[in-house]
Length: 161
Image (cartoon, rainbow, N blue to C red; front, side, top):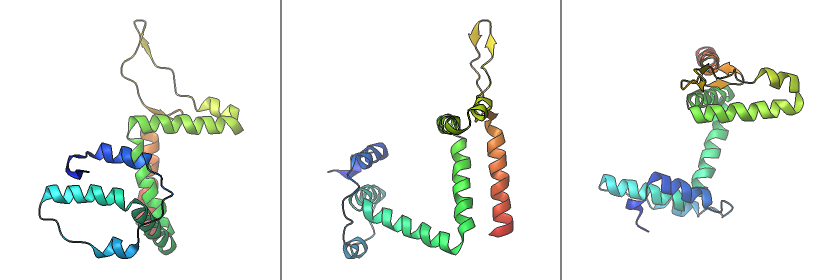
């Protein structure tokens, strides 16, 4: 396979379709065969090829590093996850999907609370829904969640890390 012509989207699609239960490649092979590529194109091609070929090895390394980080500083991992979630809330599709899933889960246990989590109605101007639509998460404007999570992250980093 010519890995130089493979796009990142093609690689992600290929990784989604792969059987992840395959055993990892030997770690002696994983660590021993590294040479520095001579050009950016070769570097890019090798990165894609290695990510596909050693996917299970990389997954194991990421889990080990996160596990060691959690054992050493649990609040750092929590702060990193909150940071990632805050940035994810800035994506419209993620915010909408997150809100729907949380509301659906809450509806199973607390239907009266789920009713309060509905987003407000879209304003209608001259018989048509307004084109400018604010994103809401669990019935509140998105900026409220981003602000609360950002303040929580700041507090964690400032006082505990």
